[in-house]
Length: 350
Image 1 (cartoon, rainbow, N blue to C red):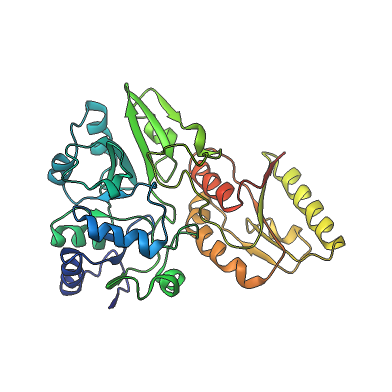
Image 2: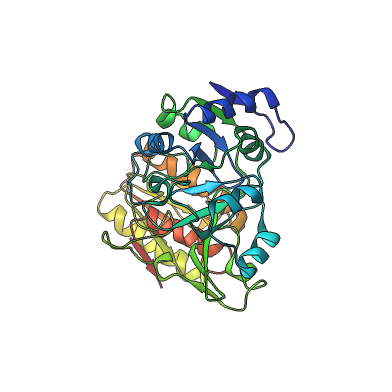
């Protein structure tokens, strides 16, 4: 069943969320909005239910899931202990787009399939009201990765993902366009240092307001080898990617970046190749090609738009998509992290 909401902030239909919560209780899957992206969720305490997520997404079993909670008691039930720094992070950023990796309390409570057999578990408390109500009414934590077939761009609106997931879930809660458009920041605290495993809306600069030491994991911008163990989703496998070949081009000097992109476009034209450029709106007039898309003017707009744009490129039947880079400051780090994976690490920094 599909339940459509015209405004995810104001319109809460208790009856429909209750119906979706019943499906969670019965061990079924529900598609639901969060403030970051849409999730495909199951009862995190039910091993068989969680296995359905992996089947629906075609997701590798060594890729851990994030557990979504609606209150601190759910966290206390799952994790072994919450440190002082972790409590400060919770107080400042929850509910919101921050996932914290904790030590698991009991393996019997959270099935190994959720954590990819690790002794840690990632937990976050979403701020989206529909997500909050769904978890509350289900009465259990909900394991939920992004709602998409693995490898594809994450879903930021139902229209983008319904074709690939309809029929694989029992209930769909449509809350419109998600607010942020990128998955949550994932961090782990070690020896009073915050390690960013996956960047998101909560930036390094914001985390530094809570802790003096904030480290960005080396794999945020580099490949993870197949035999390496990861504690966060979004690190190991090809992600966020269309089938069309993509490349990212970036320079701190915007004019230099634009000139390089124009050069690549001309090279492709000489080979009779069709090119699409995705860039900032005020740059597009400088590219003398028909196929050019506006990714937004601000980092917030780009974050919200990028997955929807990546989902559309295969329809254009071009040979190459060139995407303007945005740098690594603030929210730019999260966008760059997603773009280099969407481009299968085919990028140029000049």
